[in-house]
Image (cartoon, rainbow, N blue to C red):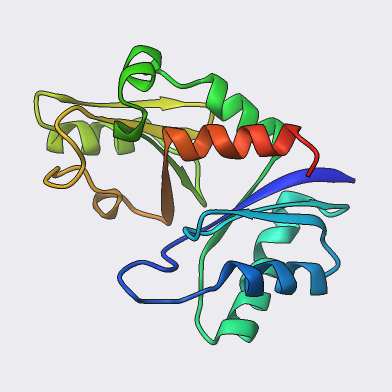
Length: 177
C-alpha cells in the first residue's frame, strides 16, 4: 500500500464547485481509500491505496462527479513524487523569505520547455518561472494578485499550490495522524 496526495483543481473558489472537506473524506473512504486526510479547503487529499496514481485519478474524478454533481480534474502523486517535487524547489531563498509568493503548479501532463518560455514571456521583471521534478515553479516577487502569469496561458490541466501548502502536504505525508 502506498501513500498518495490528490490535488483537486478549482474547488471552493469564489463560491463555485463547493466541496466540503468532510464530504470529500467520506467519499474517499467510501471508495476504499485508507487513512484519508485533507488540508485546507482548496482540494488537498491524502490517503493510502493499493492502486497506482494513474488509476486513482480517474477513480477520484468519477467519484467526485457522482457525489458533488460536477467535474473536477484531479492530479494524484505518490508521497515519493511529492517529496521529490518539494526538494526540487528552485527558489529556496525566496521560499524562506516569502513562502506565500512561491507557487508550484502540477499538471495532468508533464511541463515542457515551451510551457516555461510561454510563462516567462508573460512574467514581469520581478517574476521567475522554472521547471523541476515534473512541475512548474513560479516566483511572484510583487504578489500574484496583479500578475500576468497564469496557467491558463498553457495547454492542459494545471493546479497550483503555494509553498506553505506544498510543505504542509509533504509533512503530512510523513507524519501519522
